[in-house]
Length: 314
Ligand code: UDP
Ligand code: MG
View 1 (cartoon, rainbow, N blue to C red):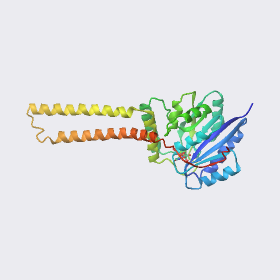
View 2 (view 1 turned 180 degrees about the vertical axis):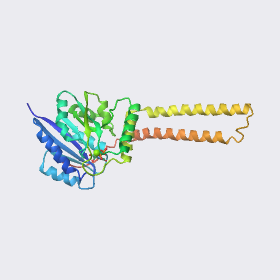
View 3 (view 1 turned 90 degrees about the vertical axis):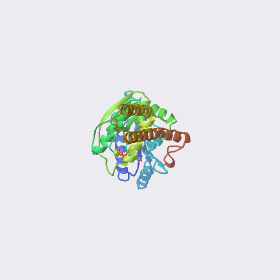
View 4 (view 1 turned 120 degrees about the horizontal axis):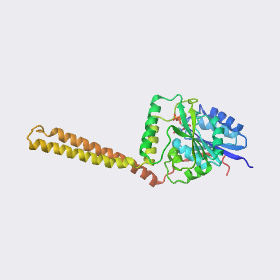
């Protein structure tokens, strides 16, 4: 029987301190695998440090290493999406470059795949070396997402996973541009398996996910998997109408019974104006988030631009 092939997809953004060790650790694990061929696809997401240089050296000596290099930073999800477009394996592993997700687990995940599971997603039992702030915001994000979304998106799950070729084909065939991968991998269905593991500390360097990128990921996730925020706008509108009716009744009562407590009328007017202004702005913001996305999709601009590809013979 012919050997099956495993493809690794590893995004890198300013990972010069990590790149070599990442390659070494991953390679060690893959070389131990019997009966499997492999390829490693590194995506350089527009890093301006030595990341690409180091990767090019590696690819020079190892033809199983392929490189996709973006023209600028397009973000983690875009990098992984680009890698998925190029994989040729039967099983595909998405893994972070910083070794927080141990590559040593791949053989065991492959076993679960051989047993017939099609999406084996890494579920973090513990997360070492991550700030309390990150843990709290991550928890809030998954709770909000699940409360709002129609698809169950597993908690404590990142993009670390092993998936079958046919799952990747499905994801690649989806026309949407801003792909929120961990949501889509759950949305596609198939036979899912939660693979529990201990998330390690970053091997070197700092996180490449500052608050701004985390917020973008969170809003991408929520907007692409839920229409509820837009419905919430309606609910807010109804709520504010009820509040205004209550204020009106209160004013009528005080007029009829000549309580004279609203003589200036200032309080009620101010409350009403500020309240409605708030509701309107809030509603506009939610709606504009959706319109912005519709606009992005309508433009049909690609999610990333590739500058260079190495070791892809074709
Ligand atoms: N990454 C990327 N583009 C970005 C940000 C991050 O390709 O714009 C990569 C990064 O190099 C790493 C992975 O995505 O391999 C996860 O990033 P990181 O480890 O910094 O995130 P954290 O683990 O802190 O959530
Ligand atoms: Mg990390």
